[in-house]
Image 1 (cartoon, rainbow, N blue to C red):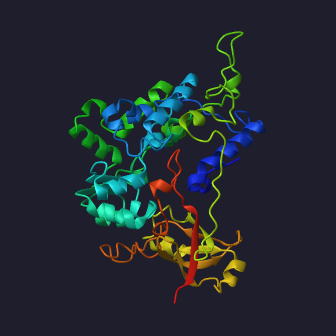
Image 2 (cartoon, one colour):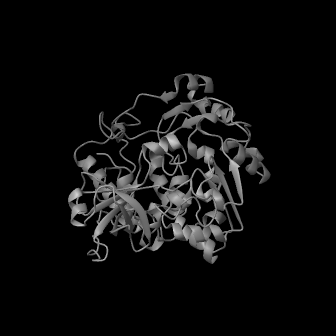
Image 3 (tube, rainbow, N blue to C red):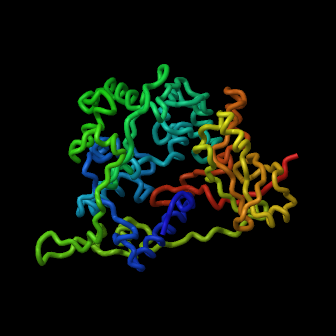
Length: 437
């Protein structure tokens, strides 16, 4: 029973759907058995948690986390309570995913200075003007900063606004050690294929140099990422060179760990819940002040002005998120952004395959070409990450940022997001189509 990005982007209903799937796995016996949902174990190598050093983040800084008192799980208090349970089984979850601040609160603090001013930002491995909800708000927030730095491969719209752009090493110019955030005893990757061209540097170099200047030299012992990865692999009795020759570190899975006992005649290990059992009725969610059973939020009756439902997260090969549209060979394969729709719905609206339409929500409008698809009626799915690198790489164009960007249509307001982890809505947004003349 698979879950992924589509469910992740349902806003306030995301957690309820994930929990419903988890309950279905439980009542059908598909938990930690061969061929079903394996409960992963801590890795033999150094986990991401020990690399990120979040455990030593001072309490005075944790208290300043935006949204700390509103988000029941995506916060330091929520993380610490859940970790108490997982530690019964020796499982230490990474912190960066589970304590990161809600982006919408960051953008608003940049503009308002409340609850405290945020005046600078370092952007790495993302392009928020295209990849985050509510482009208009983000644009205003980034423009308000005293300092904006971007680590990038290309001159993206976010880079165009930056005070400094630092050229990052490409995927073949740096080593790879992918560990699923340290949540499983699994890693894959290998050595870099070539030395970085020109002045490009691996991100490890940037963060190490910055950390040393901020008094963190004792934590940045290794000079290169390869040296760091050697240290990471040493507890697993594997050298970096051996890992690169294999490209994979994986041990056989163990199953039904909840039945294991530490001593003869002892109690089974159970699960990382308050009761130690699989809980359909979640005691910890009840303790945190949330619904103990999944409760769907029924959408209000649709607005007659926006009769269709919009999906905004569709990825399309040969692109990756907002990347690679500047390459002519790839662009010829897929030259324009598409809005997919059931042909019966399209014909009812008087829209022909290939015609240009404005997709409009209460937040804004973006331009796409209609593409007939075998999908639910009354639904429109627009491609994500579109801009036009061939257009002027400066304001006001910003590489055609304002034409076909799906996040012009989205709303990431904190107040409307899920109260457990802060998920906002990318899918199921009321919209309408207007043919472009």
